[in-house]
Length: 293
Ligand SMILES: C[S@@+](CC[C@H](N)C(=O)[O-])C[C@H]1O[C@@H](n2cnc3c(N)ncnc32)[C@H](O)[C@@H]1O
Image 1: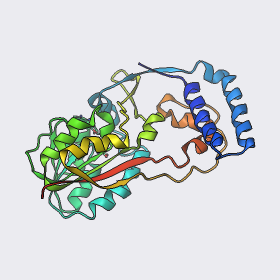
Image 2: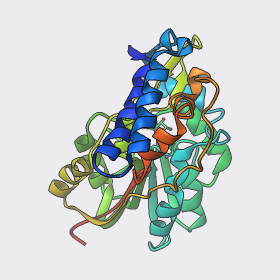
Image 3: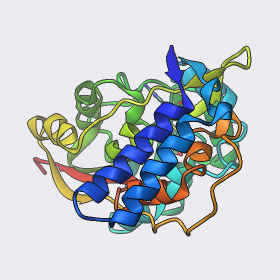
Image 4: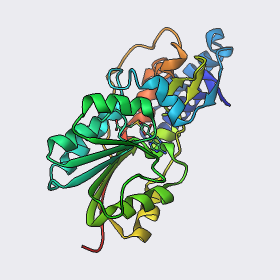
């Protein structure tokens, strides 16, 4: 169970902003404003008793409730698209695997680029959507730890926004290396570990409608390299796109519904949130090539 207290989040944002001031990024007026805001937050009766206790759900259960809105609700994580597309545009058509393909967001792009495309996902609900969206793809139910794909069958493996759901990268990277032919490419994207550390974990509802979070494991940049290098996967590209700063805004009136946390909480302290997020990458995108061609 996760005890999500809005004050814990808000004081964390203020703390991150104050660290930026402590290291010279902001002036005395900013520090005084933050300290006054912290006092105000601590005295706000609307925040004092607003904690929500939240369960973790496994991805199959979590995506059962999210599948219906996955492609329509605003999703800042789709910011990986331009970088992933730029990498995919450099690669020749062949056999591509979209591992943890979800509703087929990148599967569709692989088919459009002329790849014979296999998609694998653990969630039947996400796969149903992918089947409707990309009927040309060969879509299979399966797990990242035991991909239902033959050895050396793929010229390209794409895995987008899914590795945060696995606790350990090593066994999943071993599967990617197994299904890639020598010289094949691996393209990965995920929410940046600095964002995961700041509470970026998808909010869903469990079967009974209770608040729940999908697993959000924090994999540091070096964790990817430590998983990849022993398998002969050599990094060709690593991108950490930083979103443009949010426009200045007036503080929101209240904490908003739990489903919008932590973004609606950040909106209570927009100046602190802007400072805390300044320059923090949104995504981590990798391209690796398997040695041996
Ligand atoms: C955020 S969605 C990403 C879907 C798609 N790749 C995209 O970028 O839109 C994460 C997907 O990973 C799948 N997933 C999570 N853990 C998995 C696992 N161990 N094996 C297979 N699929 C998994 C989920 O079912 C979900 O469809």
